[in-house]
Length: 110
Image (tube, rainbow, N blue to C red; front, side, top):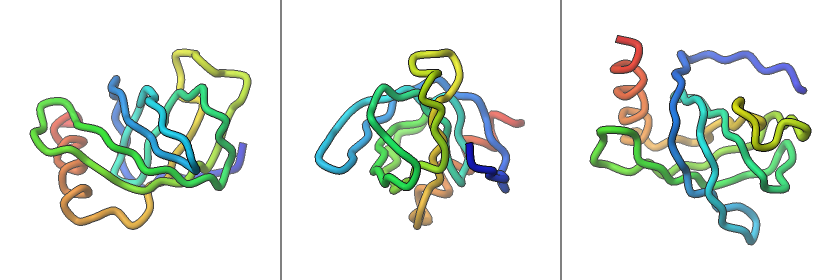
């Protein structure tokens, strides 16, 4: 796994995200989230460097979030487990999406 240092607080979540990749659309479980990225568990054939579009709605939020992400790490032998097996880093996040995620993370952290 490539070394990656997180810059933002991350919270545990349990939600689904619609993912759109190179010629493929799938749904994955999101395990954790920050304004900078997310940990997901995927069965898809992803590899570090792949880019995705993620679409999800945070708990108790009216507005959906749509953003671009790049795969930064992947653990291929942990598919279907209780931990994320794929780390995503968000790219060029729109101000409204960043504010929505930041507000959610802040509400979880108290």
